[in-house]
Structure formats: structure tokens, C-alpha cells
Length: 248
Image 1: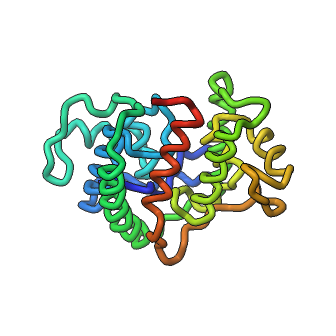
Image 2 (image 1 turned 90 degrees about the horizontal axis):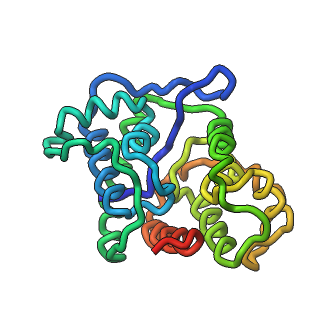
């Protein structure tokens, strides 16, 4: 199973502009199946845009629009969609691993199927979020001591950034509706939003011309899921991320 990943959200704040997470209580079958797909891809290192060291519990809470405690309680039951889970699964952290590209593509396709079913369920609930960029930029600021990207842009970083932009525009990476491209890039590249703005203002990246005011573009998922090229694009995104940050 795998995913190109679904809409994410963080805990609400009176000043963030984010509505409180609506997911609580009973787990739907679609939610359990989607969670299993996320867990499998997380454990095997198939997800292209997850920061190293991210805990599974927080990752799942983010993707499922719920609190980490809700995830912990579910994992503690030891079962998801009838599948027995390993003990102490929640605390494990994301690591890059040697992967089989063909197997990754297969799992990403399976994850995309589970994601679509879960997304349809959310649509039925009418779940909506507002101003998600506030949380993303706040997260970037909180991570400031750990930011590694400063100064000149390497060719590898530019190629990775362009692939992120492409996946953002085409809706291949699933984010909260309204997330701004600038915030998304800053979080993925582990640098300040200002560094992103300055680069985008040059009008080109990796030799590719950029339209004006690209950084303020807001994320909107495609009305009709465009799966053509999605899995291949995510696999390429994973490869470029490894090259950018020097992972094996």
C-alpha cells in the first residue's frame, strides 16, 4: 500500500486560523485501511516527503486530522482493519532505507487507492480547514535551530525544489487546502520562508522559468484525481530528496 499522501492539519490555535481537528471517536473502516497503508509505507521508507526522525504517531495524527492521543489509543488495541499490529509501533521514527523502486511504485499505488477511499469519506463529512499555512510557517520557525539550508542553492537542491513545485501544482502531494507554496517549500527544504521568497523572486530555478508571485499560490486538490504520472513523480521526488540531503 502507499500514498501520495492526504490533506494534513495541525492542532488548532486561537491565533493560527486553523479549525480544531474534527476526527474523534469511532474509526471508520476506510480510516483503518488508510492508516495501515500509511504505516506500511512509513516503516519501509517509501514516503517521499517525510522528514527524517518524524514519529509514526505524530505522522498518523497529522494525516488523519486527529490528536496523537487518538492514534496512540488505536495502536494500543493492537489491530487495524483486522490486521494484528506490532507492539510499541507509535514511537518508531522515519528513516531512509534501501528500497526496491518497483516495490515502492506498487505500494504507492495501493496507498493511493486507500487514500481516495478515505478522502471520499471525509468529503461525506464535509470536513474543511482554513489558513493551513499559518501552522506550517509556525512549525518552520519552531524548527529554526535544526534548519540546515542556508545561503547559495546547489543544483541538487534546485532540482528537488522544482519537483516539489511540480507536485504541489499538480496536486500529487496532499496538503491542507489553502497551503501556500512558499510555506510548503520552506518546510520541505528546511529553510526560512524568506530564503524561498528570494529564490522565487529570481524568476528561475534549475534553469526553469518561474511565473511571478508563484510563492503565494495556494494548494487546491484537483477536482478529478490525476493519477497519470503521480506514482512516478513521487518516486522521483523521493530520489531527489535523498540526493538533496545526502541520504543513502
